[in-house]
Image (cartoon, rainbow, N blue to C red):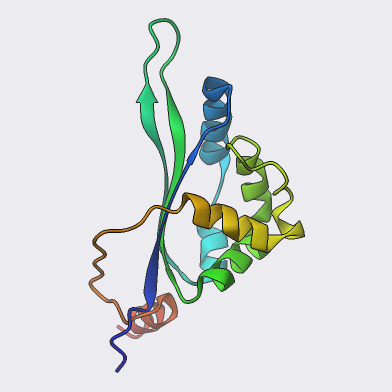
Length: 150
């Protein structure tokens, strides 16, 4: 049995483009209207994923908003294949999100250049200091097989 972890973490945190309050609202709406479960099931390598907003800003006048957009996932396998799978399955979602993030000009549509999209993700991927998994050598596929047999 391999001791190499099957899973890898992604901790993507990118600044929201100016005007930040308006772009934050647009991103929030995209997330509230999106359906990701079916797409992530189709990809079949994502253990979990969550979107968050970070760095709350509370102006003296106006509504509070957040300055950063974050995506945290645990996925199986190679980073390039992971990105290519996302481009193949949920490119429309990422095209909509990237419009509202800094330094994403030229990446849309992500289908045009998945390598540039992968480089952008790497640029904003935060290093993970401690990584724990209760099942480090089990892939999503294997976990589903085990669950269906129980």
